[in-house]
Length: 77
Image (cartoon, rainbow, N blue to C red; front, side, top):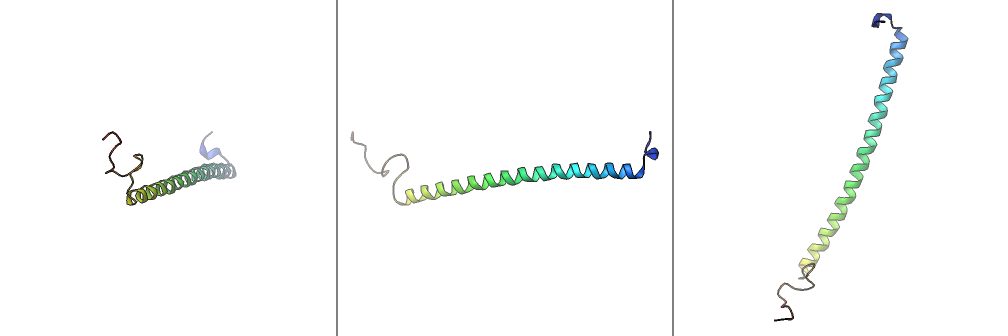
């Protein structure tokens, strides 16, 4: 069978079904992308909070992880 033998209504129905399938895939992809953007925004906000806390620690004169000032001598001196 060639394209000339296909009923026009059948061809139209096939095109509509193909478009519906493509629309469903596009909708699913959009949902996945929205979820990825949401997760990335959460990570950005978390990192921004951590950066702010580190800046506040630095401004207060303490170094994270060392437990005190950089100029403080260790007990063995």
